[in-house]
Amino acid sequence: MRPVHRFRVYPNPGTPWRFEVLIFESQASMYKYAASKWGYTATDYHAICLSTSTSESKGRKLGEVLFTLRGVTHGLIGHELIHASHHFLQTRCGKDAVVINSCGGSHTTEEIVAHAASSMINQCTAEFAKRGVQIV
Image (cartoon, rainbow, N blue to C red):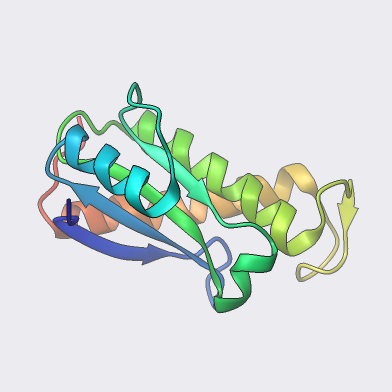
């Protein structure tokens, strides 16, 4: 049930806000972990993004993104990190804003999500490569 790899990605590098990325040996171990730590019960996904509530993110950890060693694609990484990016936007910047000034300048919500996703995707794929996890 323990992940074989663990690292952090930052939606806005240079800030403390982060997601933990955990890579498991199998889907069964990923599901067991998600159920025990998060109460997550679905068992039909190849990867999972689990996010904290606003009140839980005081420790700067915004959530966890779970993958397995097999079947990881660039699309799957992007898909889960877009979920993470939306959570970052909602938690740190306010969920209904169209133009936001509190996140380091004036940007549209779409631009903030795109920047956060591309930043975390780049970090995540580099960490996968460093750990020898094949992306297909």
